[in-house]
Length: 90
Image (cartoon, rainbow, N blue to C red; front, side, top):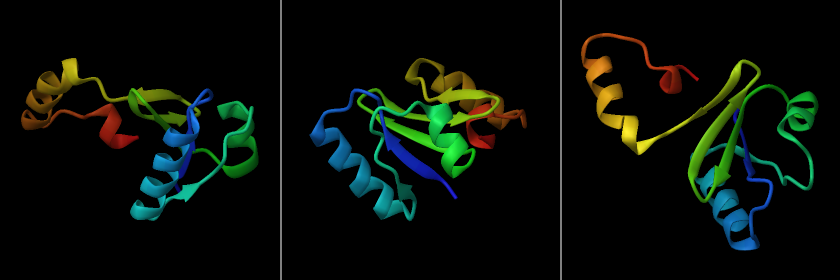
């Protein structure tokens, strides 16, 4: 199961957007409160997608993965060469 949470300091509008997006994708939305990602992982499981104004970030026990537009071209080239992509694997 993938859980979606808003960023720690997300305004109400961003929280509503995150909830609507999570529901549209079939993911579970979890209100953040003041809990850390580690607190949420301990309670719900391992995979969290943080919905923020800077874009999505996947948090897993081995680290955080996020999309960077500056790296998009390099990542596409690597995929075409058959190389692995850490964000897709996460």
